Image 1 (cartoon, rainbow, N blue to C red):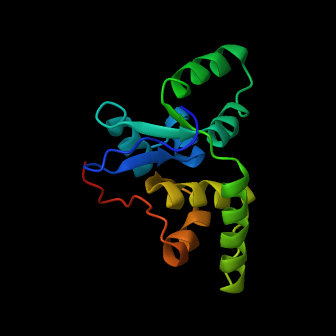
Image 2: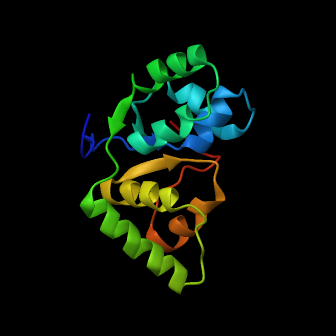
Length: 147
């Protein structure tokens, strides 16, 4: 799936960040990984092309890489790059910095901006997204999420 995701107005669409995928793959017991496990059988899950890169680059064994690639590419894939998202991401980064909030990784601003612009909820386990939730309107999923 390229470009903007198709959204169903009756339900909120969810994009899962690499921080949760990595925890899930590694068998972590954080609530986000547990929620992802539940959502995989009940909800359409989106993943970004950039998130696929972040997750897959961590595999050392070819077999594990292939298995993870098969799982991740079976999801609805969003192309997160492009000129419009690049400019909006730079604007959001500048707005955050002017407010005294520093996001450590540019890729997180790109992911957050994509979610804001496409009205996707973001399931994450990364503190870099909190300032985007507070100042930019990013819809992060909280521990009390009901599906």
